[in-house]
Length: 92
Image 1 (tube, rainbow, N blue to C red):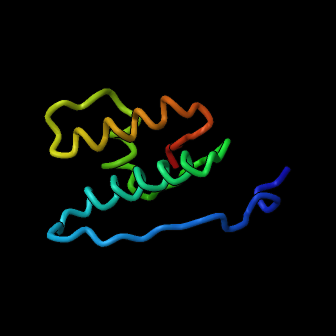
Image 2 (image 1 turned 45 degrees about the vertical axis):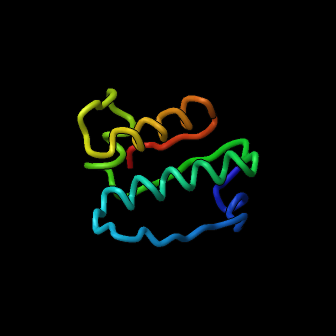
Image 3 (image 1 turned 180 degrees about the vertical axis):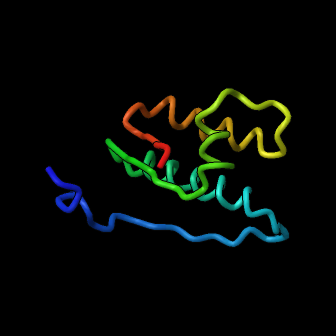
């Protein structure tokens, strides 16, 4: 089936990150919130596309990072992905 078959709005979110000017944190946080929302809604299959390949996607899909400023959030996203095998974050 084509992608057009499945394009419809289920839910959304927005947030304000007070005191933060870190764009990488905002990107990681949005990815985390999106996967968390999908998990809570019991979405069975999800593909998340992001234009943040160089920074976010590579850090999420690559080896564990211990000393990155956002290591905990990256690990939380990795856990959401590993616990939900039908969620994916492909490289564009």
